[in-house]
Image 1 (cartoon, rainbow, N blue to C red):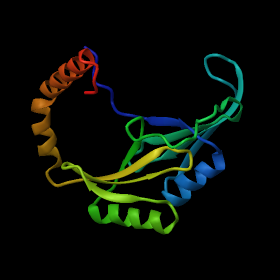
Image 2 (spheres, rainbow, N blue to C red; image 1 turned 90 degrees about the vertical axis):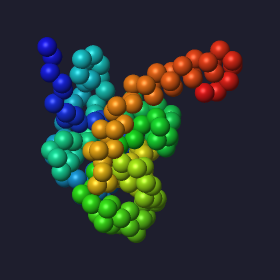
Image 3 (spheres, one colour; image 1 turned 60 degrees about the horizontal axis):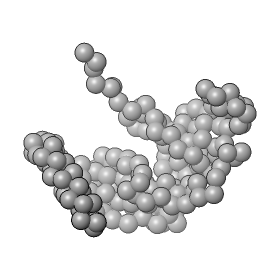
Length: 175
């Protein structure tokens, strides 16, 4: 039997500029630049496409990473993405630190709003210079109990949601 995956080593995104991205993640968010890989060709295809791949270390030992590959940028690559399409949620140690992050970001000219209470976590929201929506979240005291309760009904909720979408499609309307 295959064991569950251990965790996420890194999530990677495209960036507009390596130094701009380094300054934001290292100087503003305090994530140390752990490694930079520079290549002239794309791995796998061998196609010429010079790039650097930056890795920033998170407090848990995992990474958030970025590719600066200027020869393959497309229009719209750096437009602000909708948070439903993609976002990265970092975790703070306490609500006090969450609020301190919000205040630091706002004071530094990075618009940050919240906290929003989602029941099991509280979150603040902002974006990086590449249009990537970011979140800093903190677990509430009952986090694990709330998720354990939600796990009991999760499959039933998905099944009902899938049926709702199918009925809406049949009737030519939104879910």
